Image 1 (cartoon, one colour):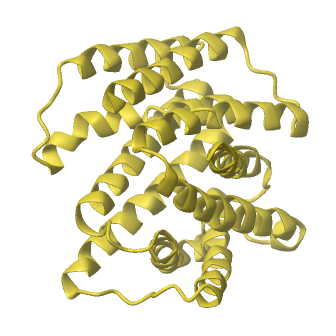
Image 2: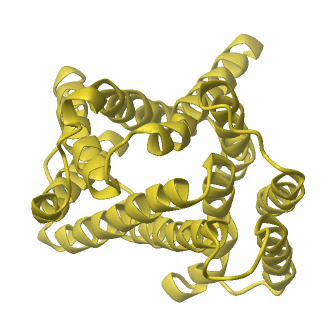
Length: 285
């Protein structure tokens, strides 16, 4: 039993590590954000479809009414990826990932609008902690600051990600996780393709290995492992463990692109991650 638990925790940590590579890859790939998202989606469709076929996952949508949440969640997923990569390009890996990790508290604020869950006043306190963390993250509050723009795009990404989670949780939670990712990446590929006519994709050949890595390691393998490992943990435990994702991202960025986070990033990020851990323990109780 102990060995099994260790194996499950190791699997979840490895999945978190793989997903953490999105930060440095999104920052490093020298292509327009829209092109990165499109190629990521297209390659991910190929990899996930092959995985579903190999493991005999049922990829049929069971009811017509499920098409709307599938489409809406994919739209928010596309917006989440686009704004997240803009956050990374404008600021750095640390700020982009830490801003995104405000999503657990944003989800808590939005959940009563989607379900019969009663709003808990403690979220006002946790929300204030997040705002203080974001204030510390930004070196100066002026729209001319790329760091502030990065934080705002990161917040927008977190809101889109939260909406996507809430839609999926309410409407299509009975579907296989890989099947959901297959449809979402397929829909994103269709949604983003018109933008390719207006952006420069001439660097595709030189960036191909990194795009494949982003689609395979981060999206297909990382998310598939995450979905599989979540079967062995409560949502709160998984949230606590996955909160190391920005830390992994910052460490990877340090070694790959030599990004050194400032003390502002350290203290502001610590406050944001603290709120995630507090809420995870609270929900477990």
